[in-house]
Length: 438
Ligand code: FCB
Image (cartoon, rainbow, N blue to C red; front, top):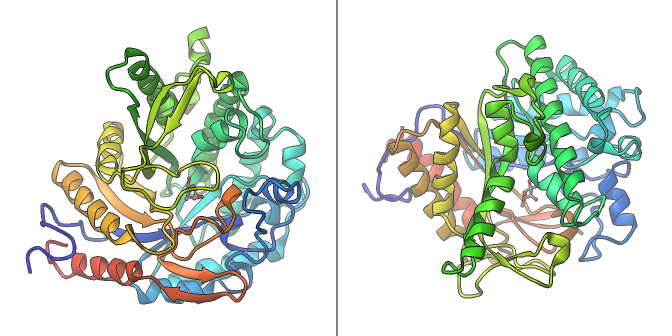
């Protein structure tokens, strides 16, 4: 049995390892009509034409999925707070919304599941967006006040916090690639300013949480992409690939590690000393590998293009663009790179869009093997969160891309386990039974 589902037991998973699933408010809750993503949907910007609607119906009944998570042996679950529900108008707090989150967090504890709460997962209340969101420095005290309210009202039920989900994706897809609201393309300076304000808001939130909860575990979720030059022999492709890697994968992290402002503001002597060291762990969201190369016809993206060779393993394609190559080794690479922080590491998201579960089982097993190798190499890896438990509303792809271990029919809310759900349950059980596990 030594080569169980977890692959060659290079290294056991530590006791208390968090075997989780990840989600976000807008994608699973339903009934979100007061944030900028619902406005984006009303403007017809969801490529599939879908509506989030009830999503996975968590606002009324998250407990149905908590039961499923428990039945798979999952012991941690990442969810986010919907700021637009908690503070629907500037300075007005909705008690009923907070109580619903209290109920959900209690429901998780009752099932032996440790909640990881994300404060910001892409969505802004409409009033906040109208104030230019994180493009404005006023965003920092507003986000800090929201954080304080969240910790004051929920802190007895949670101590694992993620300030921002993927600040690099929020800034670059919203202000550089124009794929996410507010849909701006080619705004290099705005992208940098948004990143700067996000770094400052993160640090302010970090301090606020710790002032209220000295033992809190606080970090952020870094989206990591493996970039490879499209034509490795072309110096220009190699340069582009290296440049994007440093900017996209490292900008935010570098600021937190060194207190330097994000590029290119650092080049003008801008320093953010107060943000240095403001994390207790590094969270990594890893999905794929992309090729980067010169594209003379793309002036709006500074003449580069991201592609995926069609023959490489990959899940389902997005409506207009491929999702990325499924490249399990990238997980270990990411973990090793951020191990330089000397802080614990959590994989806060990992998964693949795969409606028919064609490659998910292979990928899941391969990623587990990569985690064992990372552990064997001394990486302080504390948890893994699969994205996601059930299919959910995938931003501008709507219901088109399916990431669930469990298939969901949004019209009937019927759920059906994909083979990967059972596989994940087996992986978790084996890791606990000492088959190379703890
Ligand atoms: C990540 C997002 C998450 C989900 C997955 C598929 O980038 O954080 O909300 O959309 O991708």
